[in-house]
Amino acid sequence: MTILIDTNVFLWFLSNNSQLPQEFLAQITSTKNKVFISIASLWEIVLKERFGKLKLKVPVAEFIQDIEQIKPIHLVELTKLKLYHKDPFDRIIISQARVENHKLLYTDTMINKYF
Image (cartoon, rainbow, N blue to C red; front, side, top):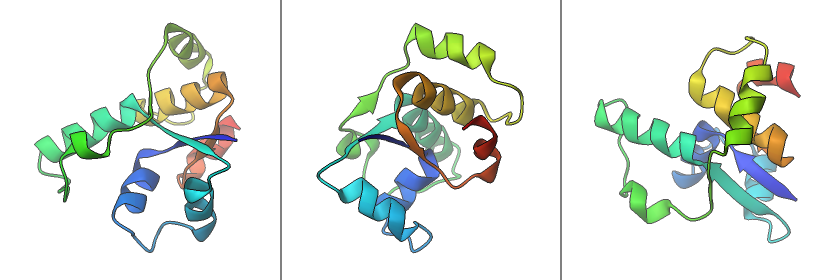
């Protein structure tokens, strides 16, 4: 299975945060799954760190592996999304997951409306 993980899920995974659901941890660490993070998540992380809203223990470059790039078709899908959720980072991540048929791991219940 291919999985795209939302920004907060990624950060919780990196920091071994107890808020990360055990089910998500199992899916992320399973060798049966290919796990991706959106370039939009990295952009969000960089901005939050730059503005002092987030402190990372390691530089962003050290945890970049499988990055899901934004493609024009993701933007087309973005235009089809209803405005349930207004966060631009979440909206592009939702679009990517839908287009690429990735399972999206997220904790924001507002995202449920898109799946």
